[in-house]
Image 1 (cartoon, helix red, strand yellow):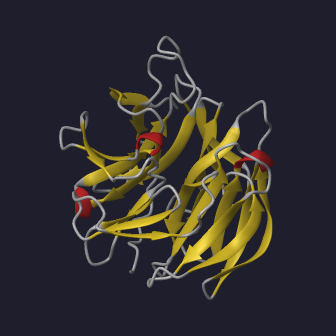
Image 2: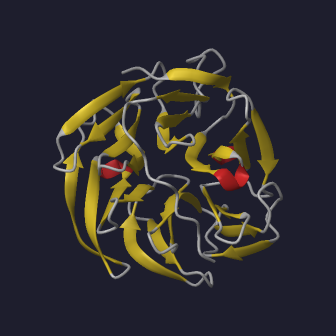
Image 3: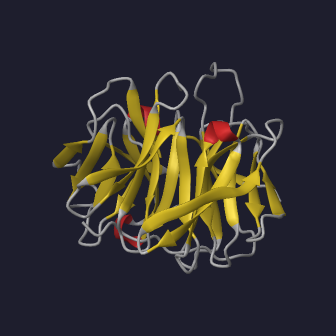
Length: 284
């Protein structure tokens, strides 16, 4: 399968796509520009929203409207889908560490992961954030906390700390992640696991940074499908569209010169013949 370029280059470091009717469909972040990008109804152009932070790590809708976004060292909340955050909370003070990827669990709790700007081993964390914005550390000694998503029945959580070269899986037991173990290991020559999503049948779709592809793994860990892209830095993916049958894929041109990979930074899509899961809004 091969994904189609639907926007042309629109981001420096596209990440974190998520579909929600509350903001009109597909939204993703330009992470290093601190912007939210929303795909317009024409399916080709985007509108931009500056969140007032140098980093926009990921975004999720809120149950009562608006959104929550990962800022450089914390979280920002907005009560309206197209307004900048009016409330912020800082989770740490170290200027060498920034937010990266995250998600919501089946109950609407937030998981948010970090990384150091220098990508230093073991200096990042994965946090759990309750509806009152109280945060606790779920994993420490992480390097690049990346994709995280839950199985359709909510019993499993899949997670990538990119330099490990693995997607790991946890049991989700009464809202706590237990018994971390390898789900799949990806050869470095193939790419590095970045953002990921899980479809309605339990397949894990993972973007491969430096791999020019998205891989889909069956619930038993076997490779079920490969989506090829014409750019190397494939960053994240999600299912969207009114029927959740379109796989949207973000890409990055971080570190590239103007002449490198002309399509990098574009949003890509395809319909792989499966259905995704609807996003769970943040309950706070």
